[in-house]
Amino acid sequence: MQHGLQFPVPPESNSPGWAYFVRARIKENILFTKNLGFCKLIYCPIGKNFWQRVYEIQGLSGHKVPVYFLDTALSENTPWDQTLTGHLYGGDSHYRFGQEVVLGMGGMVLISALAPEEPVIYHMNEGHSDLLTLSLLESRIGGGAGAPTDAGGEDVRRQYVFTTHTPVPAGHDKFHWDLVSKVLGLERADLLRASNCCFDGSPTMTYLALRFARYINGVAMRQGEISTGMFPDYPIDAITSGVHAVTWTSPSFAELFDRRTSCQVYHM
Image (cartoon, rainbow, N blue to C red; front, side, top):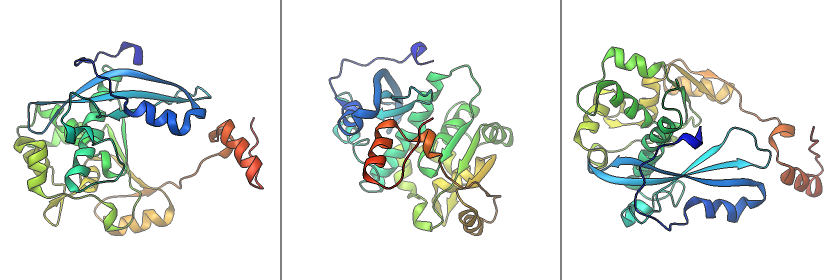
């Protein structure tokens, strides 16, 4: 699908972006890094052009579940916007909310470009990307104006599943309305307010996900029980997380584990 992408292209940029970051740290496991182009994302204030570069990462096995990195370190962006993909979980609330716009709304732009005609189910892993829900709601009502209808909410719900990880209040991002309005603009903030995603008067990303997910799960039986106690109005299933080491461990890491530990990873 990636060869059919149609992205608007800004002026030439020499930003090194995420590709160099990845190659520098795990280059042994990288088969290729391909610059797919640029996505155009409307960011605050409404009408401001905000760009992100997209990279596709695949492992040495060539397994066809690529990872896409979004990079805002482009000269076309403001100096502050360029920092948004520079640190994980860094900065203040403004920085974190800006990152969530890039991940959720920017991710929606990317997926729409990758599969413009295909039905898509969006799986949100924790609340950091849940502004994607806002983009889905906007697409159902034709922009930021208005409130989500029952029919529009059901359309979103058919496309949306959610996994919650963190069974403590501190693990669920919430932001002040003045910040939300500043970053998203008044129309989008009003749509978010109308979606009933508030906790103690503040918009909370986890509640946005719970409100519109057709299926919700935790990552262990006990964690699912605790999450159900935290969010009693929503049915939360439990799927215990785990990986099969033989199929998930790359050859270079398997060799490292064999050499440095008493465990051996057998490749089939």
